[in-house]
Amino acid sequence: MARYELYDDDGSKNREECPRCGDTFLADHGDRLHCGKCSYTEWE
Image (cartoon, rainbow, N blue to C red):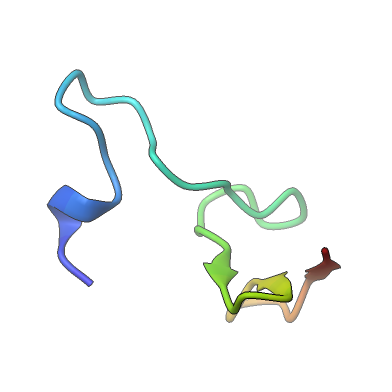
């Protein structure tokens, strides 16, 4: 995924960040959001 897909034109973040890590984005897998660094998962 390219960096321009993660941020808006004004520099704000376009994706949710991991509440446990704080410095990584959560991957959207359709039915869940997942952090690849610490394995935090939010089920939708």
